[in-house]
Image (cartoon, rainbow, N blue to C red):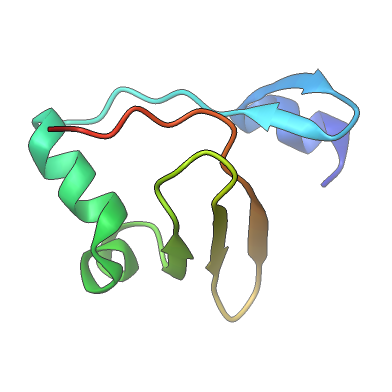
Length: 78
């Protein structure tokens, strides 16, 4: 990802990482459900997978783009 493009959507934390922070219009429980349920994730962010644990992998993709990475911080909703 070009650094200027990444800066439009998140904060570059180093040469290999972008921090994304968003305020979402829903309860914490609802957002967590959408992140951790594959079918709901597809309706919100796109097809993909999110392993909700430190060191877990995530991948989101569409017909035009994909993004993947490793979860470095995760505070599960309970």
